[in-house]
Image 1 (tube, rainbow, N blue to C red):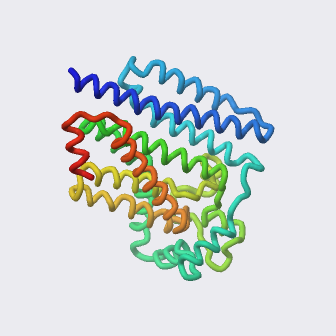
Image 2 (cartoon, helix red, strand yellow):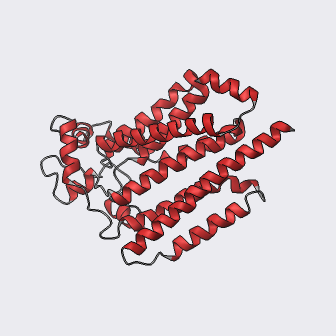
Image 3 (cartoon, rainbow, N blue to C red):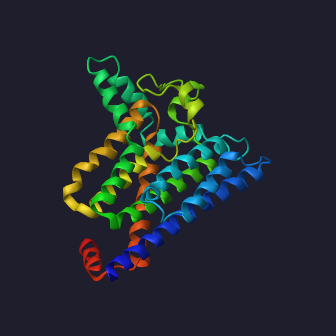
Amino acid sequence: MADCSLEANRTFQFQRIIFSLQIGMIVLMSLLFLSKGKLPGLDLLGLALLTVFLWWARDRTSLLNFAPFLMLMLTYESIRILALVPGLGALHVTDLIVWEESLSGGIIPSHILQHAWSAQPYTWIIDLVANGFYMTHFISAIALGLLLWVKRREHYWPFLLGLTVLSYAAFITYVLFPAAPPWWASMFGYLKGQAVDLSHSLLTPGYIIATGNPVASMPSLHTAYPFYIFFYCFYLWGKKSLPVVLLPVGVAVSSIYLGHHYVIDVLAGLFYAIVAFLCTIWWIRNRIKLSPQEQTEVLATA
């Protein structure tokens, strides 16, 4: 009985901090809109009301335990609109190219990979695999969340807390530091000598501009999510989870090859994932009351 009460209290702690982060993010986005003389849209108002409702009704149905995934997707849509508001931050293009060339010895790795793997008998296979990896970033996060909910429910909310911190840190960066990806820089004439395009990607420039945020390159969330997933899997299952590392590596290489990200974007995504993971572990070990058995498990993994 005591263990059930302890688990309920721990779940409440994670729910409170995650929903507080989501409300805080909505307030911050609204203030940014107002600072630029624009009224927040109905989408933000609806998002705020939905968050409050989900918090109020958190004990009514188990389906609401998966609400934070929905909130992340809805928040990203608002961030996409906010990032495109003029004056919030200068678009970074040439500085990213300089950093990439400094890191890679004067070359643009996306250009090199596309040049090496194009017009080959096996190009269609590489394109298929690369697009498959690239499209998994959010799906894989949901998949691990469901696995934890079924198999290791005590780790579901800690995992989700780290995912929320990671996502919102990236969202804020997109607003304050809008960064053009290599395909965008090439399309507008900034990479004339080392052209990069989206000919291998299923996502066309028109589609990205119409439905996504074309200047959300730094950090690469496509890379950050799977690295965070790998770190958490390794924390829980140790060497048994080593094959999971193929996911972030595959996504990282695919992101560069397809022209969506620079190497520095990928490294930034890795850094954000490390910070989010360490914050989650710190929270587990210092802010959450554990049962004696769980304390023993934590010490064993330290």
